[in-house]
Amino acid sequence: MTTSQIDYMQIGLKVGLEIHQQLDTSTKLFCRCKPELFKEEPEITFLRRLRPTQSELGQIDPAAYFEFQKGVKILYEANSQTSCLVEMDEEPPHPLNTEAVEIALTVALMMNATPVDEIHVMRKTVIDGSNTTGFQRTCIIALNGTIKVGEKTIPIQHISLEEDAARKTGEEGTTIRYRIDRLGIPLIEVATAPVINTPKEAGEVALAIGKILRATGKVKRGLGTIRQDLNISIRGGALTEIKGVQELELIPLVVEYEVQRQLNLIKISQELAEAGARPENLKEEFFDVTEVFQQTSCKVLRKAIEKGHRILAVKLPNFAGFLKRELIPGIRLGTEMADRARFWGRVDGIFHTDELPAYGITAQEVEALKRAVDAQPSDTVVFVADTPENTVEALKAVIERAREALKGVPEETRAANPDGTTRYMRPRPGAARMYPETDIPPIHLTEEYINKVRQNLPELPEQKLQRLMREYSLNQKLAQQLIDSEYTELFEKIARECKVSPTIVAAFLTETLKALKREGTPVENLSENRIIEIFKALEAGEITKEALPEIADWTSKNPDKTLKDTVENLGLKVLREEELEKILGQIISQNKDLIEKSGAKAFGLIMGIAMKELRGKANAETVSKIIKKKLGIS
Image (cartoon, rainbow, N blue to C red):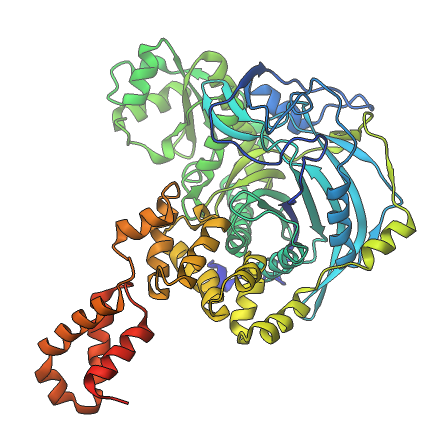
């Protein structure tokens, strides 16, 4: 079934969104460090291993235990400008950043939410290494808000404030490297109720929330500053949490793929039952089949054997053919088993007989493998080559995933891929994950303070749309594109500072940059200051508006070069009028016959030839004026 054939209401699709956006504050959430990233070599490094601890109820969160099972060590990198002893967990956190609180409260009031009486900071267990403390600090600012999206009212469950995580910079073996410059940057979290019923609606709700956040003028822009998490379920499926969707445009596709994945898993579970697969037949009985592959031509297996590793196999009764069943494009049931094996067993992957012979493994070796584990034609055999400990853990994970396949859709947390597909990340967290933060006193929100914030709320997106059209003479389409983009504040800044047509600025920030991004240009490298510099150069007559796309493209790919370097490299220095006179005179002279034959159309033809040859080196208005003069057109 294709996504276009799915009746989302009939299958009971429910989607809840959690939007996380970095706030543009002067300091971090729990210290006075700059909320910036650094590119230089770190001044400080330190090594840690994080372990799960019991909650106040004596429970260990399964997601935390999962991360601990990986046995990894964390190498943290820091510099003195962007982190201090608070991020290193060597000093208690400072009081909550009141600037961040005010921004979050502003957003809450714009979403008609009810502020809490007191802000209490909580700890949320996170031991994947992304936080030196082993937990993330978070606090609820307001509850029970609403926003209008089209004709539908979307409940907002809560608006919260939390610290961003450290950023992963590399991995070598069992050591993961994190930079703690991002750790502690204030994040606002906006969570909707699970009332979204179609992929398209999910994208529209995320866009509406993003507009309100940007309307504050207090959120950071650019790649990595916003992350969207989705909670998705269908009737007969399971609640799946998808983390880290960075592109707004991807949200509908992520929902479509998850629905398709769950529908196919439900179908597979039914077909497995019909094929006679039973959970009691899935046994953790592992066979050492190293001897079967002693003479193999498979490079992966040969390398493992040469290292002294063992090859262990397990039988999945009545699973033949199911591991190669596609769930979504590029993702099969076998792929999901391999993901589990990688995480739990720390192996590179798995082999299974549904995809063999292949990879240098012969049909004779497959038959010998099946005999070694007493597999029937209806069975699938999965095998792994690694250390005995890792192979056992990997095959246990395969068996567990096979048992889940019999039930249908497992509850789990998945990570978003750049193409809209997802991969296994960890088990769903349990109730033992949250507990109170004892180092930070609560903040009382007085009615007087709330009313003061309420009286100074920024424009709502609908109000700003009308004002942009009125003040800058923009048409509705351009104004709406600006509101939907990240560039509304930048547009107004350029329009105020530069004597350039607001329409040209708006079209560049929306249509031009979007087109370049679609073509693969890394427009996220184009800083706000560089864009302002480009328009100041346009105002000064140093570049032409026709050159804007080419300059933006080259600058995005060479962000360390100056604008002067860019213009010189591209040969886009604006020609003086006397130089233009000469060039245009030559073009007219070379096309005399064309001019005579074309009559009234001659101007348009010559204009086209000239602009193609001058390619961003001259303003169209100036070229037009000179051509008309030379052709004697008034």
